[in-house]
Length: 599
Image 1: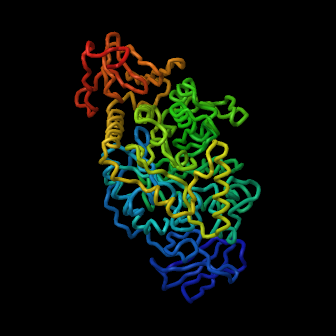
Image 2 (image 1 turned 45 degrees about the vertical axis):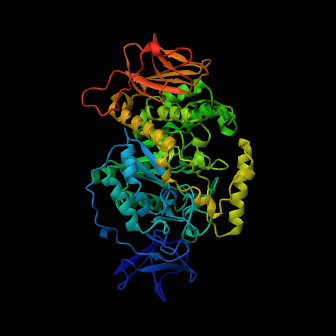
């Protein structure tokens, strides 16, 4: 027996469609409809017919085995037998690993992704972040055009398969975050507006109609979204949610929906007895996202800091087109290393206005930073990674800046070994007009960066998707293996030194010499020296010891430590007894080195 329920204030009649049967539903006063079927249960396929029209998927469908146009299937979330007695792990001090289920493994499924978990555990990552998995049209895509928010995408596997992935990750000591999209829904197979006022014309997002969070009928829309969050955290045991593009979640209510969400997640965390976190994606540099409610904030746990990425990228690559024109100076990089945001109420030439707010009073873990992520790689014309843009030496510098920062580091799949596979944008739209509009729209955007649109692979071509799959065989090749060792050592060093996980930003100091291309970052007693200049740098060392170096040419010389161009050294007091830090590298004696040539 199952009681079917659906919120549909717009139609005059709603029927449950069960194969060849139609079951009339009873309308309640609050816009909900109900009907009970004694033969229905887990595994039953169904849909809702509105005003005797074609069956539509349940807005809260837990599974769409035949895709977004097909029937919904009833799921018993209580039937899965969880193997791991997971009690969670805090976000602070962790390293996030962002992955796309369809390209992480050869199989491109939830089950296939399980095969990557030992690698992540060995790397030292603490959190696996999955790009969106909610049902979207077609068989392949990034997932940012969802239409069934409660259903895992059918091409990745079943709801039980997703639970097995989360369960297995917990068994490897990894927390799991899910990327969710609530600012808009996909442009095709999106039938929510036929049910009720899920969208509003008062606002417009870059991707279409805005979700109705503050207009007539918005109470149920807000419940819909918050119920979606509760389901992922409770029924699938995700440890957190990364909320996509919150600057496009428009809400003028006295209590913003993000604030309401944060309060509900906090209550669920207390009930479940394990930490749960919310991470916002926004390019607005708005401290209200993560400030406590008592200080006028929404109370989210962390937010992505695009400024940090842009500073590192522009400084190391020299790119200065598009939004990178605001970045690229060593002074800007030094500011980003201190406080994540460069634009904190200062003028942005790219935006031609003052941008951002002050991060004063915030802590390091309240920012997620990266040198690569799906957007920054995939929104390039060819989806080329940093490994195609930087020398091996500068890749090591980027990794050191990321993994010694006071913020929460995020690694994009394959970054740790310098994966050569690109990550271009790919789609599987059935509507030819929509496919052409997406293709043409992206090509026009690339002109702002000076890229040739002809270099963009066709998102609709299945080959574009297949070339994005990681090549795990690269791990056995020397150059890739060496970079992977560097990442592992840096993550181990980060975990072994309290200085490097200290959340206090007032204990971070950065000095730089823009003319010489030199930068010195101090985290308590740990120092990170970076030479991006054209000349060798003899950095005063004092009584400190080398902890990690990006180049075998780095070593002791009279008066300090010699760093050739494009190298980084981390030094400080030796690790304490029992530390699991990488061994301090042995340095050649001073007479064997020429301080001017490095040989």
